[in-house]
Length: 201
Image (cartoon, rainbow, N blue to C red; front, side, top):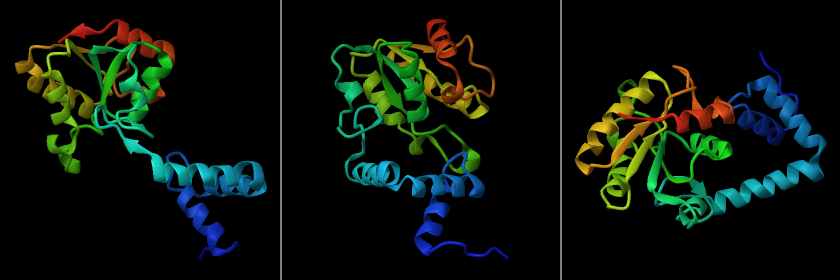
């Protein structure tokens, strides 16, 4: 039987922190204690940042990225090559590719991958908007930078078939991405090499 060792506010903070990826109950308690110990210079600014994020963060109507404006800062950047669209599963994958500075195109976030067992079909992903963008006449190449998992590969094949009528070039990232690997966990050099060695599919 677990005992309550702090007030309800602190217990709730620990409970919520424990829901974050990579944080179990013990790590959440450590994080909560660290925040409480540094109330002025960490806890209060974090609370303010989270409050502002709730009010201002939105999904980009163009690509699905998260930002405080829509279209997002990346889509608004006129220096980007709009003829190349890099398709990723999640926003974390977009951020990973941006860290690697591997390509100067624009992005498209699907919001996941196809997974019939989990009830995720094409209608649950941001695929219709991708098809609209590919049919606009501005896009010349779509790079599928999906995770090298079974679900990622199934999603890639589905999108490739749907893009066929648009006559845009379709590529996939290659070298350096291991089977079962997720983009957000790869180093910048590996991601850059994967983009540069893409091949037509």
